[in-house]
Structures are given as C-alpha cells and as structure tokens.
Image 1 (spheres, helix red, strand yellow):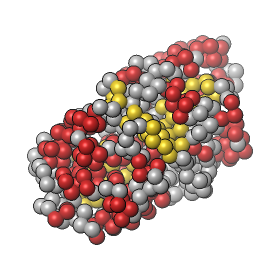
Image 2 (cartoon, one colour; image 1 turned 180 degrees about the vertical axis):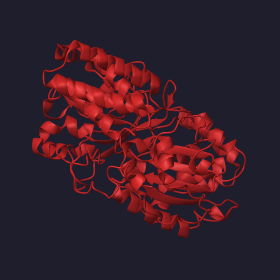
Image 3 (cartoon, one colour; image 1 turned 90 degrees about the vertical axis):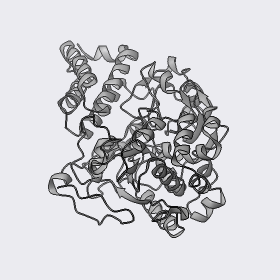
Image 4 (tube, helix red, strand yellow; image 1 turned 90 degrees about the horizontal axis):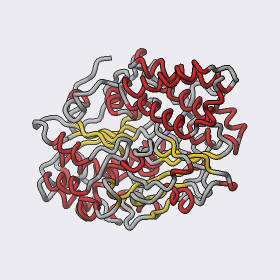
Length: 501
C-alpha cells in the first residue's frame, strides 16, 4: 500500500482497509482479543492464582499480550473493577484528577483548571513553552528517558511547513496500564497537552495512536475530541488565536512492536510496521516524511503543569537527572495493586513494601521488573536502589514505562526466560536477523532446558545470541531482550546453569 498525502488540518482520515500484505503483519487485525485471556508477563507471574485461566490463555491462537488489567492478573477481558489510584508526591501532576474520580467531560476538566495552561500559553510565543520544558528536566516516560525538551527543540528547529505531533498510546509493556486510565478517565489532559505541543513546535496536526486492546480509551477520546472541537480548542484559530490544530484517534491493529516509534509511524501511514534504521530521526523525517514530535501519553500530560507552575518548580522534585514524578502501575502480586504517582528517588523497596504493601498472600519476593518484559530484572538484594533513570541503569534495570511486575517463589527463572523470549519471538517485526532468528532460538533452548534436554554447548550458544542481540539489533526490542537475559545470567546463575548438562 502506498502512503497517502498528509491530511489537511481539520480533516479526518477516511477509514481504509488494510492491504493483504499489511494485514498479514498483525496478530489481531480483526479484534480477536475480545473476551480472551491475557498471556502477558504480569499474568504469567500471577498464573498460580488462577491456573485454569492461565491454561486458557496459553492455548489461545492468536496470542493476546496485555489487556491493561495487570492489577487483576491473570486477566481476561475488560470486566474487572477499576484499580485504586493514589498520589504519593507533593503534587498530583499526572494522576491527580484520576485519583479524584476522573474528569471525562469538558465541564469537569475545566472546573478543575483544564485548558487554563493552553489559554495562557497562547498569549506568549512558543519559545516560552520550549524554555519551560527545558528547565523542567522532563524526560520521556515511555522507555529510553530521552530529554523531552531536546526532542521538542529538534522539531521546532525544522523549517516551517507541515509538522506532526503523535501520542504513542500503544502501551503494551507488561504491568503497564498508566496510559489506559489517563485516556479513559482524563482524556482532555492528553488533548490539551497535544495542542500545547503542536503550538510549541509549529505543528498543525496530531494523532493519538491507541492500541487495539483499549477500546474504551478510543471511545472516550473521540467524545472528548468532539467536545474540545465544539469549544474552539481544536480546528482553525484555536482559542481564538492565529493557530490551527486538528487531532484524531488512530486505532492500532495489535502489535507490541508498534510501540517503537518508527514502527508506529509506518502503521499510521498504512505500511507494514517494520522498524526503520535511524538516522534520519522522526524529528527530521517522521510521519509522511515530515518532522514529527512523538511522545507517550504520560510524558505529554506532564506539560500543562509545567507551563502553569514553571519548569523550575517541576525540577525541584526528583533525584539526580530524574526530575519530577513518575506514575507506576503495580501488578496483582502486590497486596495493594494499582496506580501510584511518586517522586523520582523513592527506593524500589519502598515501592514494593510500603506502597504495594508487600506480596499478596505473604509470598517471598524473587524479583521485580519495572518497565516491561524486555528490560533488566531487579533481584531482592538490589531493591534499595532509588527509582531513577541512571540509578536503575547502573544495576542493569530501567524505569521504562513504569509497570512494576513482582514475581515470587512460584516463578521458575528458566520458565520466566522461556516466557519472555517466546513473547519476544512472537512480537518481533522480523526486520533484523538477530531478533527474528535469535529470540526464537533462545526460546527453543530454554524449552529444551526445562525438559532436561539442554547442553553446555546450548548454554554457550545462548550467550553468543544474547551478545548478538545487544550489539546488532535494529531497535529496542532486540536490545531489550538482551538486557533482560544479561540480568538473569548475572543475578540468577544458580537457577540457570544447572539446567545445562
């Protein structure tokens, strides 16, 4: 399928069918997730709570990974009560309204100060927003933690013309359901944030890429967009000023790798969402070949507070180079699973024992994964590490998306490795050989190891494949799998090495 021309501001994209070639890429192109049980890592870690449901999930084809219900794992469908939400920081920057019951309607949002940041920002030049974000020290909340101000500067510096703002709401990391509830319970916060971003970088069109498994989020956002448009916050002359901005929701088709920025952009364009080599980066050549600012939902939603209170006030919170707050979502192994907003700098132990209340049923902590299945595991002896980008990276872990998945003594480490690499192989885009072939081969090796049929030669092959994934993968999917494997080999050798005779 060839790409179409950029959509003129103020016009919606007409629905279009996927070509057979593009459709074949996706596992859930026709919504096959409906009513299915989840096979994600949070549900894997909780499988002993409901073995029958896990058996059902494991037998499904196509597989369904992460329904955004990790607080009720092992999960099935979207029928659970909503999770508890609490703010453990000086300011409820991200989850404040959600914790207070939400603000789905325009009236509710405005009553709580909504769109005031945008109205004020439109009185000043875009540079003021850019400067505030620079001063805040805000970093991307979707994975790598790249400085948000630097990304915005890169897009703003591009020559005038068509530019785009894209919200990555393809939240699929194990344990993560932050963006889901921001979209469902506080949709106007995302809309206001995207308009602010468009004004700051000179973009006139935005897209919210919502994952297929979050149908309610898409419905709520569509209703909120209609309200915002009717109130004059979208369309020509936003807020009565000489600035136009249009925004639409684009629903994905079921693919974890579409959380990677180049894959996501190709998906919107109607192409096979295979990862692309960089440079050029999306800030220079992104959606439809135009400069594009791409942030995840939580990153964007920080900005209205920064615009209102100033970057310096935001930077007062946090630790080291990790400033502000971070939303966390705790899985069902915790005594108190749910959504929590904390300041950077709290320890992982505080998150596990004080906020989460320890493990459900008095289970013994065996490890914690923060930010998804393709990231380092934190063993119990390192849980006094502070929550921070550099601090967690120093122990081979990461902040990632902020989904906190604990696992207890019921989880076999070799079985966890097999699970993660099975997921990695299934969700690989197939563009690069190390990820396409290596992840599946490591899965096979650990399947054999669990069956007592793996050798020392297999173990060395596994180590070689991990090194190849780390050094030559095209994107974070392969390199993340390598980080996960490295942390397992480093922290759990007594469980891994005896599996290889």
